[in-house]
Length: 193
Image 1 (cartoon, one colour):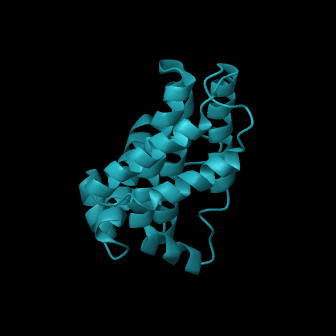
Image 2 (cartoon, one colour):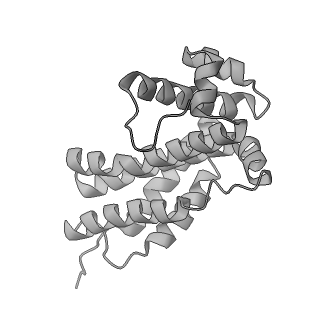
């Protein structure tokens, strides 16, 4: 039986759900869409019945795993801004974005199956990403470390392009260098006379 929308999920059920989502991301990214749900449940340390209580279909699990990764990425912003100067927080978040895109690329076939079933796992992605980038740029602009005239959508498009280079470890190093170049373009430069 699924947890009631009116009643909060028990702590053990929350832990099981989180472990299932982590195992699903790993499995779909590494093994593709044909990985068995039994294997995912086993990797998460739960029974198949627990998996089906949380995710009644394969598509529901794939979509939840993708959305969980998106939430993790966007949810990192407040902690990064709390622990680092805004420009450093922005650069670190860019690394997390590239990792997220690499995972998403690994899950591409599984996500296509979700879309084929009539669901759209991406429908809120752009808005959440733009909000995260806006928060970072606003903080860094307010601190005077990044320009204030930057469009968040331009940063998102640039990050998407950079993430296309990341895959193998050597390519990930190149992606890091490209992110450094992007940050250089975003930095506030005092006018020199």
